[in-house]
Length: 311
Image (tube, rainbow, N blue to C red; front, side, top):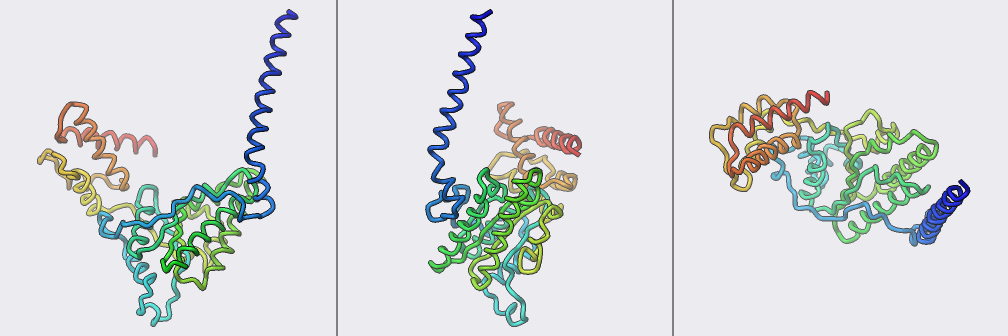
């Protein structure tokens, strides 16, 4: 019995020793970063690595079925269209794209940047919520600094924040609530500070506009709300045609594309792409290079069943 207790004691000591060593190493590697975050030393603090700083070549013509009229007007306005200025309209600073998941909000934001030949700074609101206090506001400041640097080089800059509702969801704990409020406050401060810089535009996307902090929707913030709906029948047909015959894929001419477009109401862009991919996978599983009617019908029935189960 004593031997068993001794073995257990030694094992426990070894486990605690390993945990202590791991924590010590973690603390050693992150001590400076934590210090800089707490003291506000932005210059020496680690820069956020969760943002993509890029130029995009996606244009409106690349979006199957086109873009809403409000998006076309927005492009014209951001290009300094004199007709809007002559009418006394004020250029929007914060644009909020609202729509269900998979309806193409991110692609539309990228296409706006492509049409304007603007630098796109792409990030997600969920990445602002970190362990250390102050890291969210720090990332916000860094993103706006990147946008400012782009405009100094004569470029327009678009900051795209996906999943903006993530800032309104994390309220389960006192720390998360305080950090969320600090991050939202910093975002609003930065937006207010760039009112005179017409070359910076902030676009955000959400499918839960009801969960957003009211401060984000006030005038001068994300007050320009554009709804991105699910594709209608004509757009679904165009998408099916595109995905089915992409890369000169062999397709059974008996497939009635219009029928599936009419009967896929509620499908988003991702669903339609998945429908064709499942059909192609089924054809490949059966050692065929051509998608047959039975492949698309089986995949369609499978997706319909999945949608019913998730409702």
